[in-house]
Length: 188
Ligand code: HEC
Image (cartoon, rainbow, N blue to C red):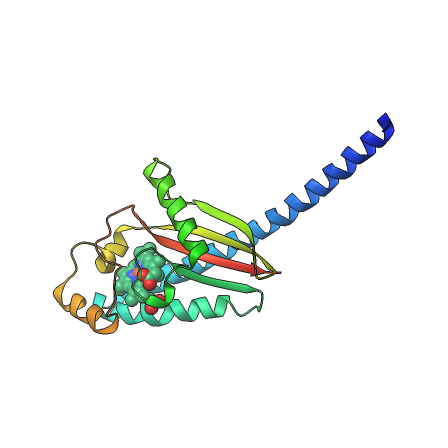
């Protein structure tokens, strides 16, 4: 192969690399925007419910609003948005095998001292011949969250939680622990 051909080939390879990196960057950006908007809306609803009523009342905001928001953000047939966790309150949010691996990686990075805010993990996956782009964004446990996910939960709230979520595992969290992750799938 002469020099000209080698140059042409490496040039083509570079173009291919840039093009594929660009596609991934676009998808990462799309996921970041979706996760940020979802988080902002949900936190806003939660804060105003906690401000205007008692925690037991705010519970219904969480159990209704969170799944509604997830459904609304997933209206586009190629976009799936939700929340997941190693320890779930609602069994419908339980992680699948890809999410389990991702959550474990996020937790490992946290234990190694990395800050949770903005921590992400993504991968292009192929399942049964279908390719998709999957993305997780860490959800830290803030002080607001401890009221319903912390170690000390009021007895009335505890009772109500037990009534609605018989398999609740989302209690006993401490400040700044990994509560879970926003999970986004972009199908191709
Ligand atoms: C008023 C009580 C309440 C507060 C405060 C609260 N949550 Fe929740 N959380 C819930 C309920 C109820 C669910 C179950 C929602 C559902 O059915 O999808 C839930 C579910 C979740 C889930 C989905 C995984 C699972 O366990 O099913 C995550 C992640 C989560 N909460 C994070 C947080 C974070 C982070 C905060 C603080 C910013 C917070 N929550 C504050 C009540 C609360």
